[in-house]
Length: 622
Image (cartoon, rainbow, N blue to C red; front, side, top):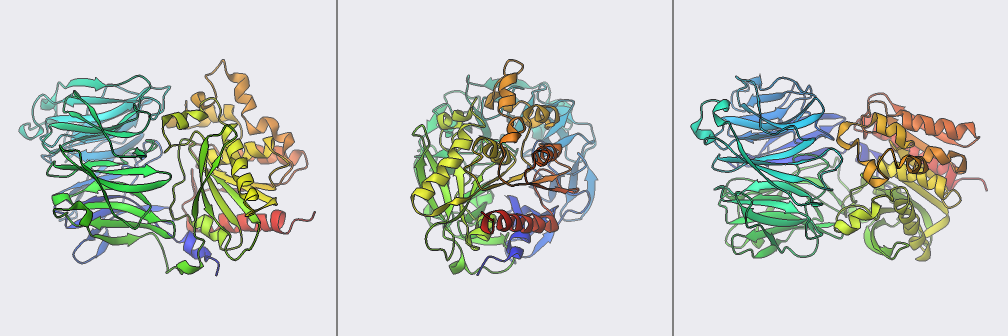
């Protein structure tokens, strides 16, 4: 039986789990029909209740995330209007902690409970600020106007705070540094924020190295962080001042992911300081690790999941995560505090993103495949075979966004939707994505619009060669950067593809430069070339430049509130295709941004896409 459309469009998004410091409740962000709330779920009873009302949670630095923090009976969250909001979880009272900024995110309460550090975006910079929890004084600035700062983290003794930051022409995965700051006095021994100044700061940095996710040990003696100076994102531990840093060997794979959003954690100390928990990814699959400290003995925690995110630690070493598997939708899970053997941890599912029960026997059973790019580089594919089809099936090739990103081996509702309707569906982890080391990631530098297009075709040819895909019915699709690759593929390989579906994709690089939001306004200068010298190359890498070559039908979706890729990009491409007599269907949403959250729009997107593919691929007249 095909996966019902309601199972796709009614699914909820669950993210950012956190445990109360008493470890008696788990908190998380839930998004339903485009609306975000923060939920508290009591672990003993399972009762889940929404604790936020107005303003709605925001987290509006860059692409969002880093919505809240909780300590004791106080929850601080980033409101949609650009201010931090405080909430007393016992009394229900609410207050405004800060003035409004262009964006706020990642609040972190000091160990003493008096102060909250947070990110504030304003005036073309993103700084780390600090304010008293009740908002009785104005925030003070801790950072020195970096282009961007992410992920502030207090030391357990309240003496220090650390964060990561990077420069204007870099993305955080290109080169970023750690700033370690010591307060003038302990936070617990000050009665006002100004008494914490002046800060004494030092910087941990390496040329051409990304340093991220600083985490002080509970006693403040050690600093754990992620660095890719070995060529792979790895766990490092140093003394509190950054001295004597050493890499921890956690096996094949990478610790952490590119910092597209603030607040995403892949490393956490346990409260006793005797171990670290970390998420390691290898070949698109995650493993939870327990690393004893200071012995550095690494052990895997057995789990029936393949993708993990949002690691958080509570009292006694209790854990919470977002977890999913290839036929299991995302869920919030918790772990009891470990006994002597961390491998004996028991997990409990607390909330699931799914709506309705699934018959897993009728689902496509995805496979992790490997093939060789044209230069011999191995690339990983996540392939969902067509259910009930013997022999070659029509194929959808999906390209991830970013493009410095990855499609992991997890539940993919859209892939299941089409695979259970007779389509093969393959997601391509093309050269230049993340998860396979720094050298692999840099294969896209100067080559965006070339190697990703090549690898999409290679994936299709690989499945054709295996006898699993029909060479006459090949569709390419993707969102954002994946939408860009889709449009480029239709102009560079016009005879190979049967049709294309672009979601909020890029058509004109110059126009994107003028309209993109600040977080990635310079991203393309590394992926294509520095302006103004690389101007001709920017034209060559714009799908709109070669729109006359488009011979296949294309369907485009875009939200009019998109701040990352302005919707005019899709409008211009569709109109250019039509002017030359080609087929271009365009769907615009008044109430969507970069990605679609509203149930009605998600339904329409799937229905329009399916009808388009039936019309021009399955039932096309030859």
